[in-house]
Amino acid sequence: MKILKVIVVYVILILIFELFIRFFYPEYGSLNHNFRVTGGIPFKLNSYGLRDYEFNFDKGNKFRILVLGDSITFGTQNKLDCTYPKVLEKLLNGDRSSKYQTINAGGVGGNTIYEYSYLKEKGIKLKPDYVILGFCLNDIGNNYAVEKNGITKNPNFWDNPEGFRAVCNSKVWNKNLLLRDNLAMQLNSFRWGLRSKSYFYSFVDVNLTRLMYRYGIKKYSFNIYEEKQQMLCFGIDAISEEVWQLTLNKILEIKNFLDDRRIKFLLVVFPYEFQLSNNIKDNFFNINKTKFKIDPQERLINFCREKRIDALDMLPYFKKSNKKIYFPLDYCHPNVNGHRIAAEEIYNILLQKIR
Image (cartoon, rainbow, N blue to C red):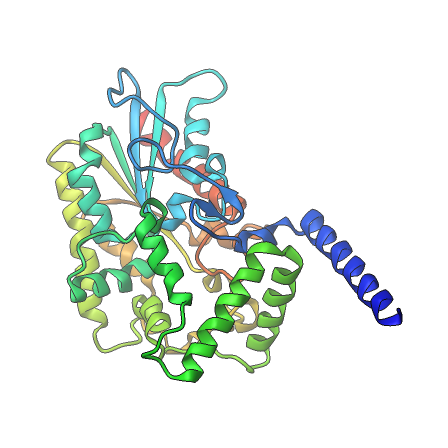
């Protein structure tokens, strides 16, 4: 009986903690991902395969803004109305007008190559008056990986049940892997499963992970392929110039493509979370920036200035905010505050360009 009482007490305590975290720290639900669920928020795609409301193909007298991008633009972990394309639409229209229409064409797993391909094949058919490209710094490494491996199709599993099942199948025991690797994969799968169901577990997991990075028990590695790929924009590798040229050329191709059709273009550069402070202890993964040789924002903005491309660097605006900008255990996806700031700064630029 004593053991039963202890179990009951612990269960009650866990439930209390769960409710407490859900009420006071709702951002810890952002780790809940599943097919057609992002950050615990169910979503659906419209008939054009976009995370947006249904809209008429014929824009009529509306001023149409097509917003290209990856998971940031898509709004991973955010409600649709909280994504910067939709907040921008509200700012442009005010309380009464419906003259301006933004179309969210962001896709999870996107990069500049995929986005340009979408623009040429589908986006341009929507007859946009203005195109915005939401650019994440990891696009630079991702572009190189896509080009090197000859991958031409966007693996956007939000719109691809088969692709999502392939991701889920990675949880299945793989006979070709070592026992140690299989166990690590199963443990990580179990860990993410718990995160998706419990805010309390997510809270404990995230903050324990933070402490492990803080005290050097766990370290972010520039030698692991996936982690290194995210950092290629900082010139940590001998191939950095080749990587950069590929992306810069692609941005210029987009600009020229739109110029030929007299469509205005704006590049919006989103920073990483660890760029907001120079103190290594202020970024989640304790990423040591002493190995960085390139300032990616500076290079992008200088390139855009040289090629007469309108560009907006979100780093200084995120830096001066006194609010949390990113989700827990995430250094590239802005939360509702980040999306709001981005929409406001884009709005300030568009006021000079389209009104």
